[in-house]
Image: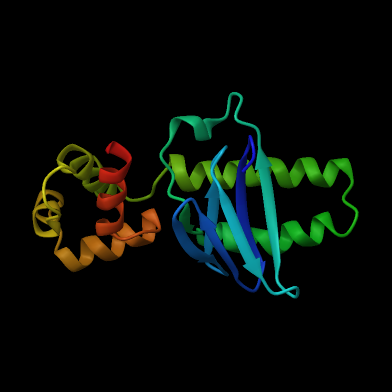
Length: 175
């Protein structure tokens, strides 16, 4: 564990990561966020490569959001990561480092602060209000005017986890 936020982003291969009691893979389309003081461990092959982006908690926009530990990277972020690696090279200069840091912050802000699907935000608010009830995807889908399968697909795409996983995590967090 450590005192800062840590974004773990894929460049090559897979990283098995456990954060508290949740385990998943960081891979070409999945990233992870480790919160301050969260216990975590990882395993990876030596040929794999990841960008680890540390952020201090002081005055961070991350403090005000609930971000899942594992999430699906936006297409833009997936395309930016190889560019960031090339720009940083083996010995990054201050200008390159500052540029990558600034763009990374903006891409992460875009991913988590400006969600592209307001219907899924509506579902999240509905689940947050009804999390103590039994999981009922049909009711949530009805509230959002979507079919259950469409809601589940869009929810997973935007949130990086299924509706059931989000619902259970919400209950555990409240407990």
